[in-house]
Picture 1 (tube, rainbow, N blue to C red):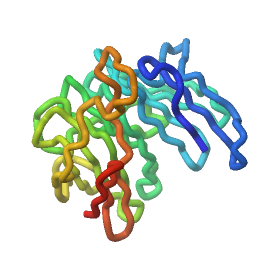
Picture 2: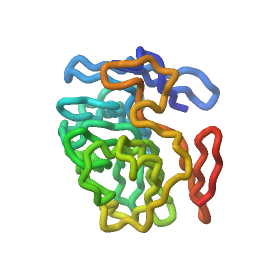
Picture 3: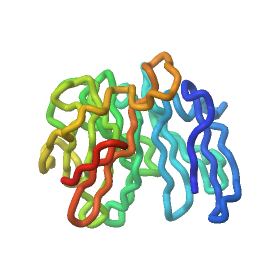
Picture 4: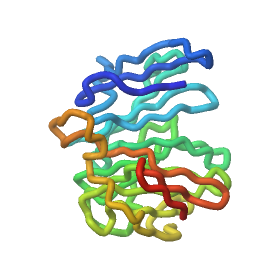
Length: 236
């Protein structure tokens, strides 16, 4: 079991690993000196590679510049993998591992103030992040707050939390390879609960906004996409 939290929520937070008996194995402090990097800046996304136990950690928002992803080995030690920064993808709110029919990749839901991109694709050992627009809108600030992959067919569902009113609280379904042209449909969630970079109201304010922009709302099975925001439950 992996648990993220702690720190001050503004510049960094920590990641801890527990075994199946609930015994703490190690805690990563959230900070690196060389290269200079901190896990967080409004709480970044993270994901575990199930085959190896390696952990990928992102940075919530880095402006100017770009959010970078680092990798820890199964012992919680930085193993020198770090992605390149790009202003075209400066925010990282959600990371998910996709088997992608035997060619694994990491999908990053985020956004930027410098382009209309909202997802990034990282395929280690490559250190580049392929960022792209998936809505067809040319507006900036297209932040994804939550996303999920259907393991049967690799369809991706994403939920937007953005200052762009037509996109805010809107759900998209995309087929691989997740571009604007592979959108199957999009629809309003029906609830105005998400508010860009203010989705953790219990966190202290910081230089980039009130808190951060991720959410845990979506789930999927073979028949339905489920939406649950803590108050509203809905099946699509």
